[in-house]
Image 1 (tube, rainbow, N blue to C red):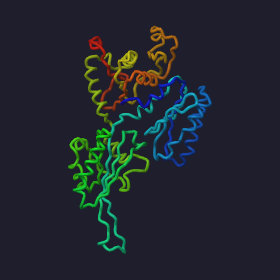
Image 2 (cartoon, helix red, strand yellow):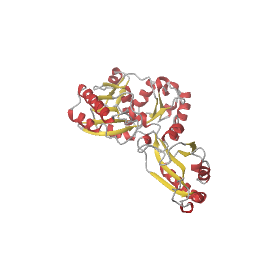
Image 3 (cartoon, helix red, strand yellow):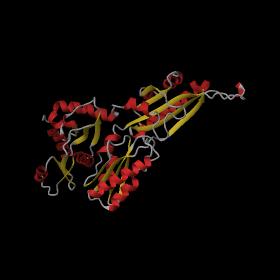
Image 4 (cartoon, rainbow, N blue to C red):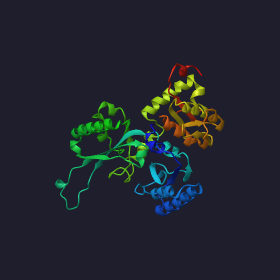
Amino acid sequence: MKLSFLDPLFAEPGPWASVCVDTSQDVDDPGRAIDLRRRHLRDALFEQGADAGTVSALDAAVGTDHEVPGRHGQALFAAHGRLVLAAALPEPPARDTARFGALPDAMPPAVQRAPDIPYMAVLLFHDERAPRDDEPGEDRPPDHICAIAETGHWPLARVSPGPRLSHQVPVDEWPQTARRIAQELGDLAARHRTEVLVLGRHEDDGWAAGVLVNRMPIHLHNRVALVDSDSGAADGTAPGRALLEAEAGRVLERRLSDEDQRQVDTFQAQRARHPHRSEGITAAVTALQRAQARSLLLTRSPALPDELWTAEEPPWIALSYEELTAFGVTSAHPEPASAVLLYAAVRTGAELIVLPGDHVSPADGVAVLLRYRDAADMAPA
């Protein structure tokens, strides 16, 4: 997963105020709950020495996602009195956090954005309007098949869904019209670089789905995941949430994007040859120091040290103060390990891969896919 969405956080120096907050709307009085959280976060930032302008910028942004229903959260970042980035969190944080320091605490939104799979959801259902008592049978509109499609990146689309397109087709015209709709979906999938199409149908109504799938271009046909859906016929989900959210979650959980999976496969081969340079916190820090990391790989619960050492200019990182001073750095300071790793990854152009539990279990829950730059890099460890 590319980390360019975090570029604004590393385009200027700190100090940074970082907040992760639960802004869920599925409680009795969400406005009151969020106000209470806002006050606690504000107090925590002031206690850490944050300036009033920066705290005010964050304070004004907390809860501005109130139109998104259900469970979710926000990750907010401000510096020098200005809000720099507001990131949606598909899941609320386990606990609210507020930190003021030299580096932004950006790992939570990065991890929640992964695996960042481009996908499409399509819902098919019959629209069968019962006739009114005073409506002659011959005047009743024919039954229709409704098709609704939506693209997005999973899991961020859960709280930030993309635009939808919809069609309503008389049942007797579906075999002919489905070909045109299938081509339209194929074109949309190509533009979006869709990797998975989640096709929802009602359990007792497989005919319409079969007709549509059989008319899809081959590149899309091979990416279909057919699911039974109990979603409501109106739109398949709550307003402001992803189409077929629950069904898409079951299909896409524990998956990686195609590119991330290719990199994990490459990593497995690399680890077989160079285990000591491939996994563990020491290997990761060493590769990031040398700008040799193509991707940083993390499990969801890595065993990181509390802190790593860093210096912004030049962007050095190290396991200890002594290691940095050996490089001639005089302005080293400790920061949370997750913030330092992400800072180094962004500054050196590395990507982030968050590993599902059944893929890879590297030492310390952290690993690195190397960029080989010369013949010496290819030598056995």
